[in-house]
Length: 71
Image (tube, rainbow, N blue to C red; front, side):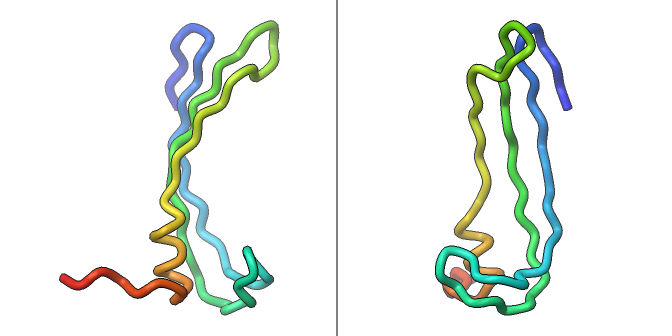
């Protein structure tokens, strides 16, 4: 985590098992990882802005819904 003034940036990694329906994709029971970053801006003790990025394409590849790119 990095804090600068009213902003906080955090990189995250979620390791999980796809054990239930996700966006219409039935459970595969595969272990998957989702990584990303979130930046928050605070004002008066509350989050007033949030920016996030994560690779859902990579997640779909791990679930076997989208083929991995060649090479």
